[in-house]
Image 1: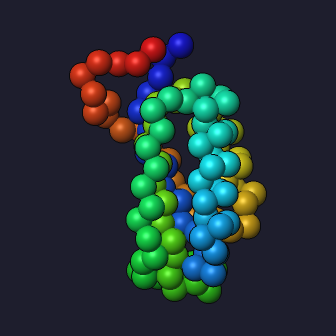
Image 2: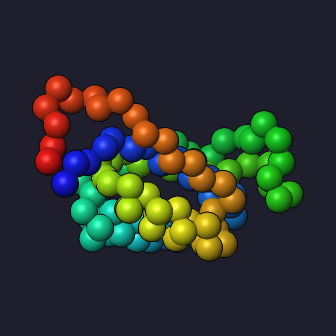
Length: 104
């Protein structure tokens, strides 16, 4: 199975606690691993001011995940994030592979 390199950034509501934030990170890491994703890197970007308000929120908590996955996993992750009430915005993009050796 061929795996592409993806980056997903999602913005949480500013009133989300650290416990909920960590549980969401663990949930998505588990979801990625269960569906064949590999080399998951999670970076907490912290609370930032939004350029424009999104559903009456002016701040958000940014979380970035980089991983190898297939297209099916992206659909599963997209559906899971769409129905999570703590996430106000998310984006997944395909990146150029950062390593010279591909993981298959």
